[in-house]
Image (tube, rainbow, N blue to C red; front, side, top):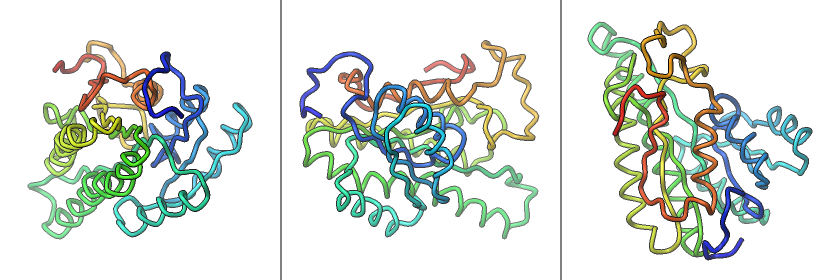
Amino acid sequence: MSTSDNQTGFSLEGLKVLVIGAQQGIGRAVAETCAAQGASLILADVEEPSGPARIIESKHGGAIVTKTCDVADRTAVDALAAELDAEGVTPNAVALTAGITKYNDWIDADPETWDADTDAIFNVNMRGPINVARAFLPRMQAAGWGRLVLVGSIAGRMGGVTSQPHYVASKGGVHAMTRLLAAKYAGAGVLVNAVAPGPTRTQMTEGRDINAAGFPLGRLLEPDDIAWPITFLLSPACSGMVGAVLDVNGGIVFS
């Protein structure tokens, strides 16, 4: 991949793209869309995403590297980055789609449950992006080109639809961190952006009473609705986007 953004068009040809959180949901959809755009893929999750990788290989060809990684564990993220270096597959672009939520009410839940939920959410949703940025952005900076895409939420914009305070705070933090990192690394040709999805049909929304009829789009979003904007932000085509948090929420809120 050239260290300049002279290439135009929405293509990931020549890029090594790491998708963290690729086992299911939005991350799995991002793996599919990136493969369709010609990327060489590295897929990681808490459980090695070998199943999705084999399916994508059968559809798009190529050999996909799969790894295990818990983004909440700094040593695990550092080890992943070092392992990819050693294997000659240091990524040019990283999409961090791993995230969790909990729905126990912050007033009615017993304190121990609330504390455990809050720790889990902050460890994955906030510590995770910090760990990934710390491990991979300096490598991109040294190469003179790179992309990091984080996943915020409509909850970080306006409190969400069924969210609790710990999740809202974690996603608002992702939005703020996107802007900080973007300003720090843009001069080196490394662009950091994010998407802020609305309610999406994934494991996270299963069993939730969400009345999509009142949304302007009239439906829950599908993982592909989020995956394509992320894939664009991983590409050379987004060469002028720095610190953007793209609203992909079906029109529930505008910013």
